Image 1 (tube, rainbow, N blue to C red):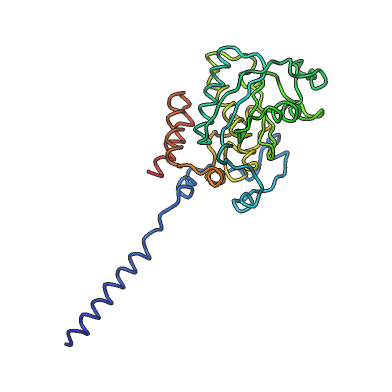
Image 2: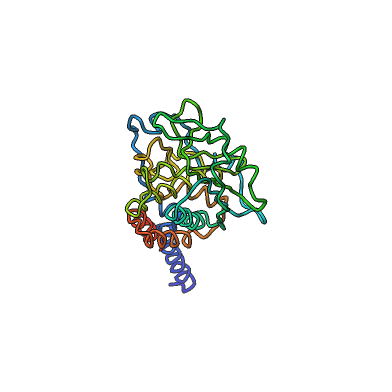
Length: 297
């Protein structure tokens, strides 16, 4: 047998084997493809009274998000600020401080709390008494007449946290939060989160509600629409029970959108979230963070 022909034939054989092996080998998944396995899909039939039942919304794809004009962190304009407004006891102050820490992890941006503003900043014309008997403040006024005017120069986002209940329009009973995409300002109220009074026993329930609504509203400021992809912190909500059902976890699609605007290390963020949930004994969210970590190790 011709030696050169034998060597060439052998070479072709081994090359064919290598090509076959490489073609059969699975492509390495991206971070978002990996954690998508933990996304909990939404029911195709939303329950009466839920946000999706009452609102017909467009599914925002990643391509839709990319085309959208939105705020992004830039040099000298990359800090999230929280603006408390009202009277807060020590437990509320602790709750706001933990929310500051959480948002710093969630968005991987410096987050600071501004000095408290008093309730006297609200003129009588933007107040009303609800059907339930509590005083409420017009949410749009907080955005347009308080927060926009006080937004620090280095702020990418200014988020108000009010002690008073909020309403967005005369025909609405209340709203948990409201945000302006273009102006990078938003507001949420803690009034309803503790079911009347914040105590040691309901502290974690109230804290979880506050970090969900705060990260949801700031997510809107970064251009993320209500999520229709999975159970996600960016789902719309009509009630506290619906807020409680939604996860603090952003789904894989919403995380991809956020990371395309705020470039951070996904695994570092996930590990920091896991540590936060562990320290605060937020067990459901801790389990989900660990499940995600197991997929990306």
